[in-house]
Length: 118
Image (cartoon, rainbow, N blue to C red):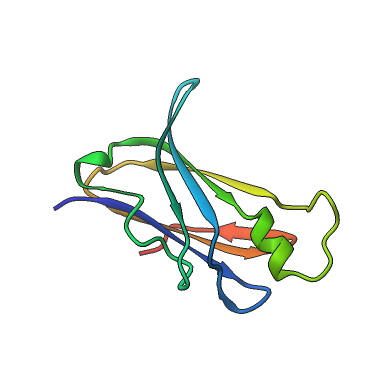
């Protein structure tokens, strides 16, 4: 059994998936940060493939950077400049390389939440 790391973004202010959000995934090792994947959310707010899967998913700490600023500028009514949220950074720990880790981002112009989904 191989593990995987997936995500999706939901726009809770508009009640729909958030399409077109660039995502960067990096592996964190002490002070070292290595980008291991990039993707953009599709019309369903998901990436077309897992961010990591199989032997590319190792135990460790990962950082997801959701570049939400442009999406929010286009989706929301008037936002201040700079916007309250521009990049949402989420660090997660992968304890089982064979596990399935799903990290949904629930997004609005002034707040967000994340959780480990299934």
